[in-house]
Length: 153
Image (cartoon, rainbow, N blue to C red):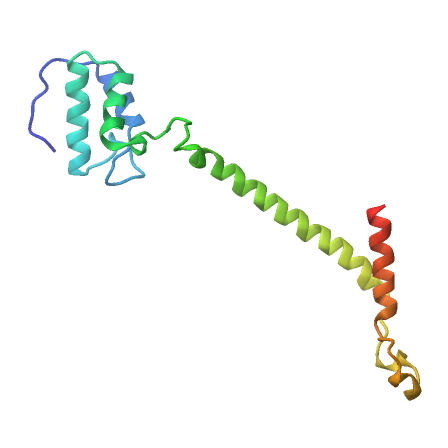
């Protein structure tokens, strides 16, 4: 932490609120107010000096963003460079919902097809049918095609 003394008295409530809105660049998941990192102490001193100089909260944030980027804000603004941060959670939620829906749909469709008996080796008929081009599952394939046609209509 820096050894600089504050040059003028400041509004401590405003200082604390602003320090809570700013991210420690070392710890990344802590605010400036919560971090014990040396850089966080330097940034707290910088915020304190800026408040004492009469700057507004927005001016202080703009100064820090110009110096360190939007990452210094716990709530970055929605703009072209940060839209993925804001849209990412919703995109993941939508992808998860879509995957869940597909699994449920396949289980429903697969469950109905599993209920119909499939021809086994005993149902293949006599050995004379073995040379024909008909496959043992052609009846199931035809039933599945018919079911798909009904679903699409």
